[in-house]
Amino acid sequence: MSESQPRLSDILEAETILEGPSSRRAFLARASALSLAIPGVGAALAACSPDSAPRGDGSNRTSTERGTASEAAQDSLRHRNSDSKLDSTLLKGARHGNSSATGSATKDAQQSAYHRYDPALPPLATGGRLQVHFHAREVPLRIADDTVVAAWTFEGDVPGPIVHCQVGDTVEFTLTNEAVVPHSMDFHAAQIDPKTAFRSVPKGQSVTYTFKPKWAGAFMYHCGTAPVLMHIGSGMYGAIIVSPREALPAAKEFVLVQSEFYLAELANGVHAFDYQKMLSTLPDFVIFNGRPNQYIQAPIKVKVGERVRFWVVNAGPTHPCNFHVVGEQFDTVYLGAPPANSIRGVQTWDVAPGGGMCFELLCDVPGEFPFVNHGFGHGQKGGIGFLVVEA
Figure 1 (tube, rainbow, N blue to C red):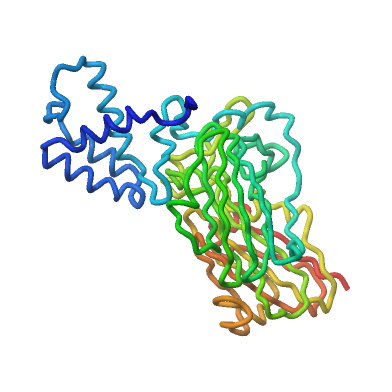
Figure 2 (cartoon, helix red, strand yellow; figure 1 turned 180 degrees about the horizontal axis):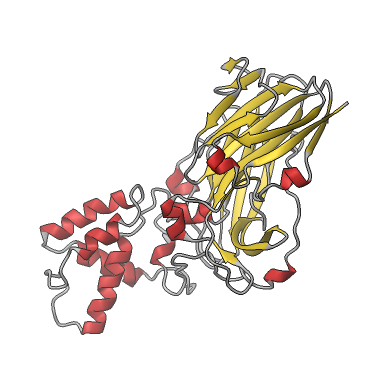
């Protein structure tokens, strides 16, 4: 058995403790379901239970054994995940605690080279079938000339690769985990049993499943391993764009994934992602496609007369994206699956965390048009770029 995989004896011991005669223990077991929605509530409730509470396994254990069992019981109440029982907070020797600085996430950080994330929507796969194989990897990622982060990633980048398919296509997906802690994959475009498909896998193992997207739109994908906030907040997210079967107007198509970065203090040239700061909801950066201001330095360029289609996904993990293009209006915004549910003449529209929308405009005026998160407390933290319309 892998050292990172939880031992059955540890889990059974925790369950034995929780199933003792104490009604308080029974209450704690029921309350553990709250810990995903309210981080830390399980641990807080467990702390209210005295060590002298009756245990089903007798009182002839040593103090060390009792301490180990108590830790296991408290771990079992912390950050329960609806998608998976392989909670990374339960694993011996692989606890990331409050930081993403695990495994190879900080190795050779100064050798990490900066690259612009290409926002162009990739072409559709042919044949109605798309095979996708992602690897969960811990890497140092340079997001600016002077800033490297300890990232948890899909395929070594943040966001992960853009996936593009059509309604009704068969998507065959495999995730192989190369990272220290367990990881999983939750596709918002899938209709599938999450307990089976979105389950976590430890290092060296894989999970494979198949789905057919039912609706068109811009959908998020992300790691669903508990605590989900930590995994999304450390970089494990991306976009799957599902095009409709009906042809949309010809356009230059781009994908923007907004997210928030919560960084720890610099250590050995790297900023780890900080779980406690994620809980505070006060981000250091709010950015498009994983790098602050990258589309100011290297704008998105189109020609006068071209239609632009922005597929906007908000990975969060917490704040909305109030999407706006300065000096322009969206002639079409799709509230649901394109091409239906469209509204006309929109200035700004909110994309919720975990959501996605499609925005269109006709570029009939030359110039430099900033696209922003118009919640400027966040827009000023990196959520801005330029759409350059050339004559």
